[in-house]
Length: 153
Image (cartoon, rainbow, N blue to C red; front, side):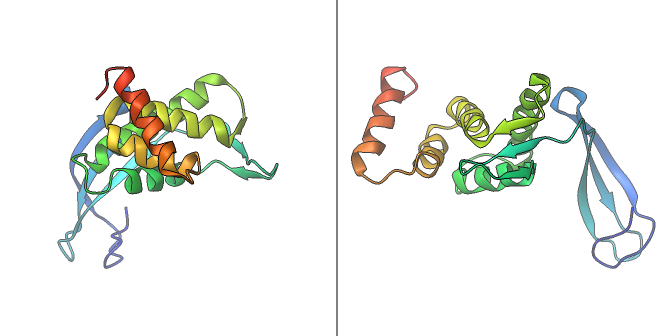
């Protein structure tokens, strides 16, 4: 693999780990030319998933969009990017197992919220506030009450 820093053709693998129940491999690499280290991920792909947006538009599914949403939700929270990648892998796996090639964006949002609810309540509330388009403080309070009633807080 080419080094993203200096462009050298042949980097070496320092460490490989299976992720997401064997559905992905994380490789830590080093460039012998510039000695930079970086991480790559290898995943298998099934048929392309199309996301149906709220306004009816269709676009190709992009796991990076979920990861970016998680990065915002987990900002300054005690969770690693690898853990976030696992969450994305779980969501993608659920979508692939459904066998549906067209998925409404609402379903993806619900899957993200389910995963966040299990992992971090603060991140869950942050994501919910954007996903559900909170306009009033009462909406935050309602979500927090739901978490309390379920014994998650």
